Image (cartoon, rainbow, N blue to C red; front, side, top):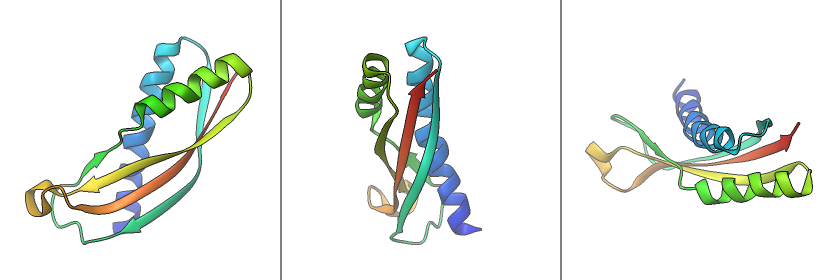
Length: 103
């Protein structure tokens, strides 16, 4: 349950960012996640905050899809924190492969 809950948080964090940027492109692009790698560093004993700073990478992916009309795959990083207990020390790190293609 613990691993699943954190994986869902990482998925949602990166997916919401990707979907927001895709919707701004006004082109029908279908995103999927092809895989997930996780590193659990410390026990998350509090409210977990998920951070994904990959907006520029996702924008570059969208531009490549629109320009080249090919499927693009890139690794998207998400870091999980429990600020109330550990400050800026991560409790987990995730890497999800985002795959997008225009239709």
